[in-house]
Amino acid sequence: MPNPTRLLAAAGAALAAPLLALVTAVTVTVLVLVGTGSSPLDVLDTMVTYAQRPRSQALMVNSAVTYYFAAVAVAIGFRMNLFNIGVDGQYRLAALLAAAVAAKISLPPVLHVTVVLLIAMGVGALWAGLAALLKVYRGVSEVISTIMLNYLGGALVAYLLTPGRLAVRTVGSNNIGTPTIPASGQIPGISLIPDSRLQVYGLAILAVAVGAGYWFLLSRTRFGFDLRAAGASEDAAKASGVRVSRMIIISMLLSGAVAGLVGMPQLLGAAHTFSLDFPAGLGFTGIAIALLGRNHPVGIAIGALLFGFLDNAATSLELRGVSRDIVLVTQGVIVLSVVVAYELVRRVRTRAEQRDVARRLAATAPAPPAPSTPQEVGA
Image (cartoon, rainbow, N blue to C red; front, side, top):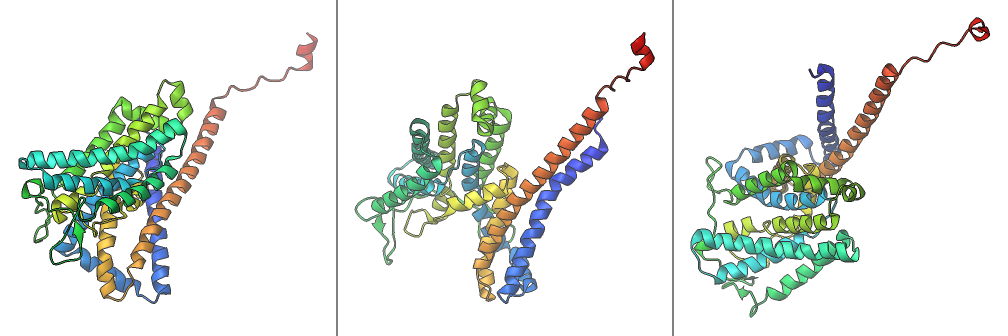
């Protein structure tokens, strides 16, 4: 039967890290607000009021759906001890090519959307696969290669997104984008938030499916076990028969495939075209959310909702004269606090376990034999 004391200690250790991170983040944010001449209470009141509006809640969920795809893409690499910084280039290139194809083809609605999603995932996987091949066959760090592929992807997007190639000039505007995706290739929204005219992206359902698939793959399959083993120790994984090079390639392909979905909620659910003002930088936000969520699908979902709320609340803060940079500071402090807090708690827990093992060994060790008396030695 489990020891109640140990259960309470384990629960306390699990809660210590997030509580420590929360206290640290709130303290630093309050100090920054006071230092910039803003009232922390007024800022809190503004954000609470904003969060109660139905439209604000829909905006928060829509941002969270996009962030969730980006964070899961990063988390897949993290579990393999790979740092996929190239999510930004992967999803932008995937969204551009998927938008161009979606505007050209004519298929039944479900099949049209399926083809577009598969194209986006394929482009993202192939672009990430380049970094995997460079790492496996040339020993190039994925950090360096994915950063460079971001620049190459951005240059390729700029080259293709010009009139006469994949883009056309928007009538009555200076904006340039791909032709509009027909209705059969669009995904309608979901009336998820009561009293809100703004609907939630229909691809929110796919985000839930991706999170469930990510959890099942890592926790309930042999592949997931091998991936986590290779990420923890390549030498130990090789000794147990795992082909680490194969795991690197597959992990990067999966990460890139999920990265290809990052731009799909905006493309198929709202914009219906890839233009110059298509959202950028979502991949780097995904890195922060993956760290915040500890690479767990539920933790990532909470982090995505938090970042979605903070990003959209920044507009309300600006109307009250508070710089939106405060939100960036808060997000950065939250991520750093979580990382530092979990590391501190891990070290404390490790030392406590070592002391517990030492006490158990001392208690179960056989008593040393009694010293012999002079009479026994003489006999």
